[in-house]
Image 1: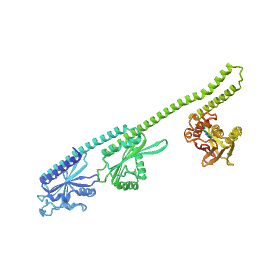
Image 2: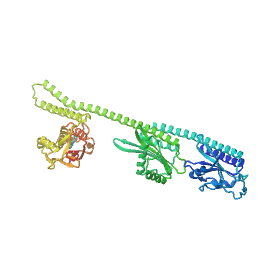
Image 3: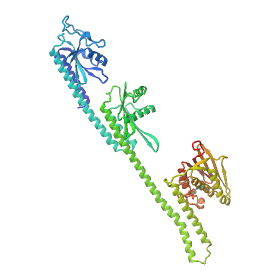
Image 4: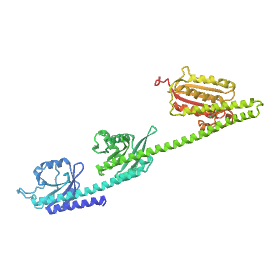
Length: 590
Ligand code: ADP
């Protein structure tokens, strides 16, 4: 039986009970009222005189009036009788039949049309559910004991009908919520990306919890950058939420996760109390009304002690209020979704690590084979010339010795660079920071390269302010960085060119620019410039001996110092490398 037919059948039953009560007990009117969640009594079924229904149905008695009436009522067994004379002034007048002229004057048992007789009925725990009220006895007299007994039986019947209906409803709700929680858990567990988890659960929650709007938000902190994953549905369209509402929802969510309870906000009520100020609750309700909603249920999403996000569900003002069972189910769903998000995150992390390991493994293999290749050629050349000299010991050895010396030098540079590269690539090797005078390192390097520069007719210019900035870092590594950049600048610059090294403070950084007027680097070569063993494709550059490791070393040193490096180059015109390093002589460090 679905809910609609259940409601219809309850209404039919209550209609039968009031008809019976009016008819059998002998009153012109009988009405059943039910207690609403705000304490009001609302008339839901009217029997007896046909005109009475239109007048009375839907009429509400506020809680205060009801309490005032019960306070003065005479107890007739389980019935409550309020004689017209005692009726509080706040009480609403009952149904006045225009033609009721049965009134008996002078008889103490005569019924006054203002008299009120109520038969309350209760749930099994003793909570009042509602009552039957009767008016205008056919006898025109107050009901006899027998009539009172029969009225009590009808009230009990109404109570039983409503209880069993509510039990059925509760059961149906429990089944619906359990099925929803199960389907959300099943769907979310199968999704392995946090953003997709959020999207996947919108539909089952929306249908399972009967909401008109739903916003699911999961926070994440990927590599230190806070990020939100949001998915939403709104029956009204345009489900965007202003940042202020997101902020409030986030706060309620975090508090709710700490309390392990979901929150409800609706007109005149915030649960748990104190989670929002009155103004904040009013702000939320104002926003809700722009979306056509009158209440919201907020359930946190979390795992362990961490609140990972929240779900906001909304309902129209006239929709049924959020039940306790729904609040618990939403919390349970928030826990399941939290677990799924954690799983998805772990999976993502594992996937990232595996691909990084694979990449590192591939890089290692490439490095081994390149090193092998780079060592093999000069060694083969040396071995060849040794053999030559052995076979022809009387020949002039000058040429062979020259070639052997050149290759030995090449091997030496290679081994040297490899050692440096491995040192600056080792994440476990700590960087010993000190205040480094970069201008001194630049001058030392300029002195070092002067003979070669002079030989090649290349000028070296150093431009530094009178008070040059200092950097934080390892003196040795920064010296190596400067040497490699200046060595390239001199190496790849032709006769008459100038190599300029400029040093200046830029905010909390030291800027070092090494520029030359040399060969320049093609766009394609620029892409691979910092890759180990990469040597430019320009034949003129390949003429110059090199290992292809200089710039990889530079890049790693820059990274270890939390610096940046950029390159600007034009073929045939020259190249400029710009390095930014943390400055030591700023107020923070000095
Ligand atoms: P190496 O200079 O030992 O070949 P690097 O890693 O220092 O290795 O440089 C890689 C490549 O980049 C060089 O082979 C060269 O083609 C190019 N390159 C580097 N610096 C310059 C520069 N200042 N001008 C032109 N080309 C350069």
